[in-house]
Length: 117
Image (cartoon, rainbow, N blue to C red):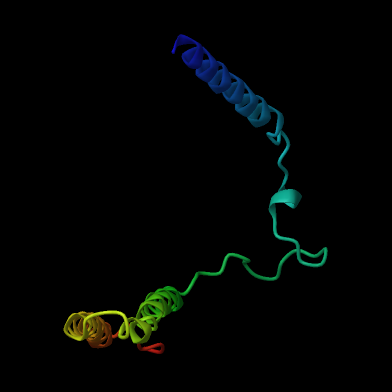
């Protein structure tokens, strides 16, 4: 048991030393304006390269991902009908679809699905 502890501590120390060495050796010491500015064909940029991100677009993308996952959960329901009890399958399917419909109604009621406002 003691040999395992020694080996574990040795591995931990070696990995810690390697991490510290890579951290010290990979640091950039010189940062100038040209290296940190965006590159636009050798010219100074005409406008700011840091445009504000549309929060509306982000919200629509998240809603799309959520409903995409939900569709991936709905598709196997047709295959499960042959292998499960019909009453249990019906209750589970109706509850799942009801939860999805309530979520969709809530997002629609809050105005999250409208792109231009």
